[in-house]
Length: 530
Image (cartoon, rainbow, N blue to C red; front, side, top):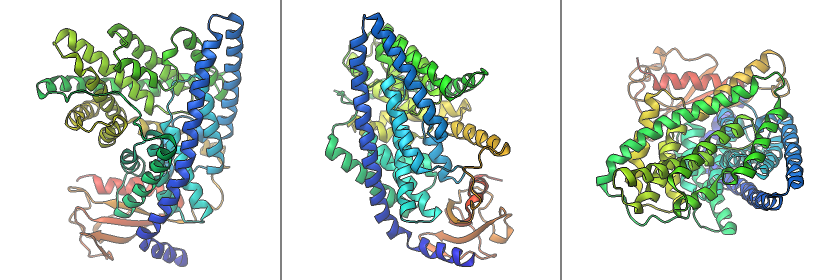
C-alpha cells in the first residue's frame, strides 16, 4: 500500500505536464468520436424527413412506418437492457463516475450510446446530441486512460477532458466545453486541470471544425443591441424563465416516475410509447420531432405567429417529457434550448403587442431566453452565457445575457428547484443502491474494486468550518489522508498544527471505493459554515 501511495503522489507532482499531452490525446480521440456521431445524426434527420415525405397521404406506407418504429423501439430497448448506463442524457453518469459514485465500461457504452442515439433521432424522438456527445467524449477519455494503464485519479481528469471535448465538438463551443466540464462535471478547479481541459476542448473543436466547417450552430442575425430602456423586460423574462425552468425539472422527473408505475413497464415498453408518439406527431406536427433545430430557423425568420409559437412550445414540451422520460439514449440540452427560444419568441411577440417593443429585437429575446432557460434548469449560468455566445457568434449581447441568466438563476433557486442533472444523478444512485442491496449489480462491483488510490482536490471557502482551524482540530472522515496543501501557489506539507485558511487547496487521498463518500464529506466541510 505504501508503494501504491508513493507512486500516486510522485505522479501527481508531474500532473501539469503529463495532463497537457494526455489532454491533447483525449481531445483528439473524443473529438473524432463525437464528430462521427454528429455526422450520423445529420443523416438520421435527413432520412427521417424523406421518410415522412414518402409516407404522407399513403395509409399503407404509414402502417409500415409504424412497424419500423416498433422495431426501432425494440432495438433501442435491447441496447439499454444490455448497457443500462446509456439510458437518458449521459451527463449524470459521467458526473457520478468523476465523483467516484458510479462505474462505466467504455467498451460497452461507446457502441451502445452511439447506436442508441442514432436510432432515437431516426425515429424522431425529441432528444438532443449534447448529453450523448459529452458521455461519448468522457468514455473516449476513459478509453485513453485504460489503454495507457493510468490510475483512477488520472482517469477522472481524462474523462473530464473528454467531456469538455464532447461538448466542444457537438456545438462548436470550446469555451463552453471547458466551463461545463469544470462547472458541472468535475465541480472543481485547478490550473493543471484547466490547461488540460482547454487543450482537449480546443483540439476536439479544431478537428470537428476542420471537417464540418466553422459556422455557428444558430445562424440568425441580431441586427441591433438591445437598448437599456428595455432591460426592465429582461427582469420579467428572467422571472418567467425561472418559474418555467423549475416546472420543467419537475415534469421531467415526474415523467420518469409515471413510466415506471405500470406493471408491464420495462426498457422496451417505455420506448414503444415514445416511438409511437413520435409516429403520431410525425403525421400531425412534424416540426416538433428531433432536436428541433429547424424551429429556430422558422422562429427567427418571422415565419411563426404568436399562437403557433405557444402551441409549438406546449407540444414540444410534452413530447420532450415523453421522449426523455422513456429512458431513451438522448439528451435534454438542445431541446431545452429550443423551448427557451420559443419562450423568448412568444414573450417578445407579446411585448410588441402590449408594450410597443420594436419587432427588430424579437431575435434578441430568442437568444436571451435560451441562456436564461438553460440557467434555470441546469443552474450553470457561466456555461449558459458562454454557450449561447459561441453558438450564435454574437458577442454584443453579453450584458443582457448576464441579466437574464442571473434573474432566472435567482428565481429557480428561490423556488428550491434542484438542478436537473443533480436530480437525475440522485435518482440514478438510488437505483444503483437498490440493485446493490438486491445483489443485482455484482457485474459492476468487482472483487478488486477500491484497491486503487484516488486523489481529490477541495478549496476551503470563506466562512466554512475548516477556516482558521488547525488540522488536528478537524474531525476528518474515515479512510482519507490529507497529503498536500496549496496556499498562494505554494505547496505545503500539512501537519497537525497547520492552520487552515480560506482559499487553501487541499489534496486528499482515499481508496477508489470510498471516493464518492469522501467527496461529499469534504465538500460539506469546505463549503458549510458553522
